[in-house]
Length: 352
Image (cartoon, rainbow, N blue to C red):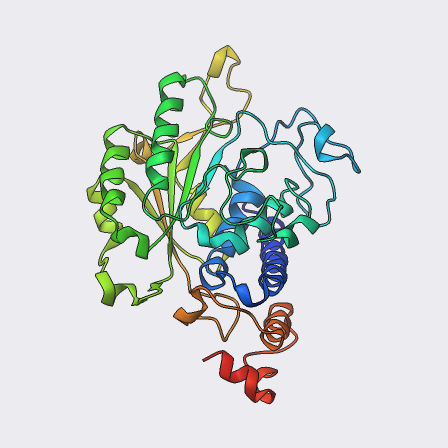
């Protein structure tokens, strides 16, 4: 159902690079206040795939014009190339994405900018008093649908939304245009009992319009997830709860996109709304029908920057100028590993 072409995978990969660079800019701008680096960098690929390809956010029948202000913008579909200065208004019938692990903010806000929902400049208003991006705000007009931060609760909010939509849904809608609800959770968050009650409820109500994405980075602020509270065979557990489960490599945007795509089939025989079968329609495969979809994405905390990867202290921390320079060089491919930081003893000590 989604564009799996090599050209599109390259486009999404470049998008993750720009998002990481913007996330670094945001982190540096917070100064001594610090920011959530590790859990944001682990899910850059996930957010790029969502906002670059998967989410239906705009009314495609109307296009916005370059240079319009947010106050008078029309509904649109952005170019999504990272250089689009046009602001786009979200459709009332958009897909809903909620990050339950709202400490992914350094990935989420750059993704909103990539999609053309906010400007690239507004990203740097992060945590600034008087701005729209202070704390964990609820601002539906720019796609911040839920004021998160308290873990274990967002999936229940999404279940309510998905259930309400299911009540008014008809069967004559192509799955490509059907409204869907996405929630991003951290793996350590799954220690919350409310999560498993929600998993049970979603399967009971047959919410196949619900997609739960699990950032499986194996690390919480308290240490390795399997040492703190082992999740074991997570995919097996979810299947036993009645979910359709996909697993993928979170370091590869192509693999992540494929996980979103795999439950759909092209139903060329469909005669939807009496239009005949001259148009391709997408539906769920037989083994995915009436099942919520869980995608377990294998990632690394701090992914993409060598001195952050696998270090729990980067869950929330200030970023020094030397670390910023090092991380930026790595993302751009100018250096590998600790080539810059190795020459700066003080900066190196900050990373351990």
